[in-house]
Length: 169
Image (tube, rainbow, N blue to C red; front, side, top):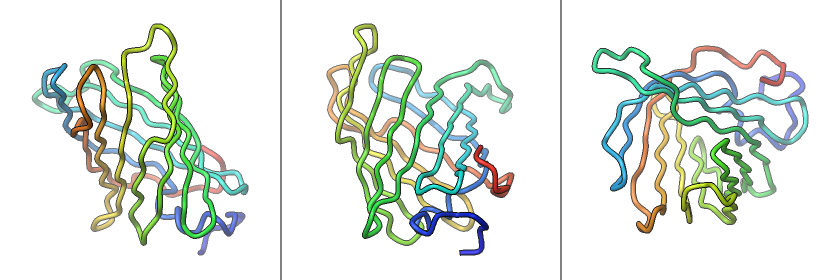
């Protein structure tokens, strides 16, 4: 695999390691369409999971940062037979557990559990797709929320801006 101190179970997910930056678009029936910037960092500490942090910010017409948007943090746990479990926490009071599968350099995920605090917005389910395309990390996110069924919400294309350094990020 070529990464020192990387747990062998992480091989299917190793393509995600590093810091990624780019831009995307978002929309939903309950919001206006937006353009956003994003940074995702995948790291690890030698155990069979990846750490994950994503930050987004609203972009103006010229691509400048306007204000912070969503952030999420969690862990991606490699499982036998290229299965993966992903736990994500959001500061808005939502926690998600996704189950999925890694096929080559593509990960498909769907929520198994969604938990919300009493003050969180209504959110019922999500599906995510991550894939490496021409060296870039492409992802798409569909959700069911605020009384609407599952439908596209956000997508982005990110470029790797830093390789994994061997320390958990």
